Length: 331
Ligand code: SF4
Image 1 (cartoon, rainbow, N blue to C red):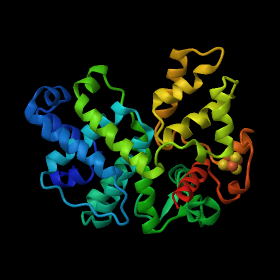
Image 2 (tube, rainbow, N blue to C red; image 1 turned 90 degrees about the vertical axis):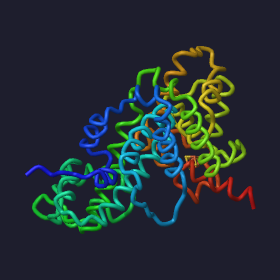
Image 3 (cartoon, rainbow, N blue to C red; image 1 turned 180 degrees about the vertical axis):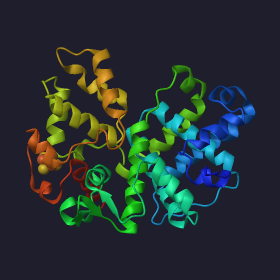
Image 4 (cartoon, protein in one colour; image 1 turned 45 degrees about the horizontal axis):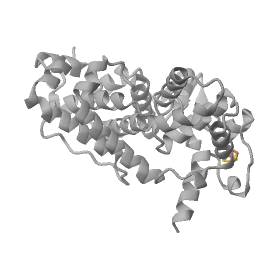
């Protein structure tokens, strides 16, 4: 029997494809939203959704939507607005927020049919206490906790045993990575310009969050590897592909403007503005797990862990080094 989902249920899981039909049935489209002033409540709700995604919280609690339809539409518009700014930190924050939010409602879910439907739609095995080996490797590949490493799991007959709690965490991770893979959306150019005031709001919100996490960009806190790459770029010396990648992702994550990153590379003899802009924009728009700053281990593998010092002994990631330095400089 076909599962009938109510608005409130869809507001809990707005990524389900059933929501698209609900929106279309009400005659709402991106064109009608940009052209109709009364539709701005949807855009304001989308901006608020992104704002909520940037808030650092200790415990996750999500309230029922007072207007479930507004909640569903704001999900779609938030994805559009975050795509317009093409900021991977923003995309990562939104994906994590949506995944945490869905997880919260899954844990309260009484409707087992809906729960099963959700798992099925996300391509997840459910309820059996075990997951096929290959699927487990795919689902857990982005989880850092030791207990999710394959060597720490019980394997039986090609299946990995999972507890109920682990199963929902794998579901959350599945939602997060799916959203990251989908973003940024490939939008017609006019969409972002039509939404300009809201796109600006989102840029400011993400910028404030980055500043809150990393403070203003401070070269004094750069780890030696990044310092070396940064100096080489500034002096127009050649940098390997992996060096450019590490430098770009690092600078972008700590909040340097895209134009600042591009101009850093402008001193090289073969500088090509169009090509550099394309490469930088490509790297920074690939989402949270797609293109992140490499860890120290990866930097070492690529031969760009340069100038390692005493402070490096306490970190395993260049961004951790930077965070620590910024924190200690505030004391
Ligand atoms: S140990 Fe890490 S932070 Fe230090 S220089 Fe090497 S890669 Fe950079």
